[in-house]
Length: 340
Image (cartoon, rainbow, N blue to C red):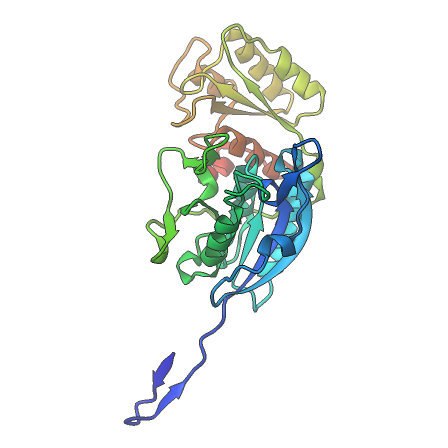
């Protein structure tokens, strides 16, 4: 980079700042290889993931944190990841952070990180759909792209992101929509906010992000929030069992725009009166909860005390309630509104 000092020909060479990205490895398919029985198991270290591949002008550090398939994660693991990310972001010399992660629950970790993200520096999650010992593994390319996304000035202020197969997603309404496809993520009622390719990182839309919440503390580990799905013939047995098992909140995955039946309506009234938080979501892949139906539909459920989770995906809604409850935040329509 050059600077004109305005003195008629005196140009000073000013070295450009070098981007530094920390890759935090947590396991997943990207770190998996076959065991003697042929099953994929997470086992590769961050040094093995990074390998000798070039990352351009970006300086890359690696940190091993976990080495598990993300289907094994509980709230504790999500909290540990959040703590590690925040510690790296606090370092002045770090430009951004990449988290390599299993695709099964990446949407939840990304959403949690975005909820508590209070830095301008980007956090980028990525992974793979094909294990590292497969000849067509997509892990190395996804990791290179995620590092570029984390190093790019274009992503400052975007919060937590998912970078996968050349596409960049904001996590708020993004879910894994296909079990094995090379491009497994999709944003409900929207699309990716950016892309990465031969022309570099391009951000096409800036995510709207509410004020960050307090990052999860140890109480988050044991905060239980369960999901009960509504279907023809469903009763309140599973909802009552969830509360007996210690659930402090239950999310109803309602039919359509958020409907249930008379048995569940009766339970909602009982549960809310007893202090259990009831969130109302939908089992439908896209679209918001719209409590307009009576006769045990969504309008009656909300009148009984259920809280609409809006257009927030079902599993994101569960995680949001768990975080708020664990930090002692009174869960009301008003406190939920900025996040749903």
